[in-house]
Image (cartoon, rainbow, N blue to C red):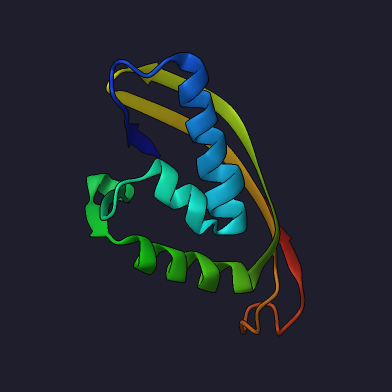
Length: 112
C-alpha cells in the first residue's frame, strides 16, 4: 500500500498516521479518524498501479460491508519505508471469515 505524505511529516507523525489507518480506520471503520487523517474525497491505490477516487461515505460503506464478513481483525506492521512524499507499508492482516460462501459452507474460517 502506498501513501502520499508531505515531506515535512516527522517519523512519529508518520507512524501515528499508519496506526490510525490500520487500527482505527480499517479495524473499527472509524469515521472520525478517517475525517481527521484523510482528505475527502481521496485516491485509493489498487493493485497494478490503478487508482480510484473515493469519498469517505463510500469507503466507510465498503469497510462496514467487509467487516460483516471478516471478524476479529488484527493488523501488524512488518516494514515501513518512508521517502517523502511517499511511504510504503508492508503489513499482515488476520481475520476470521464469517460468511455464507460456498467454499466454506457457512463455517467460520481464519485467514492470515
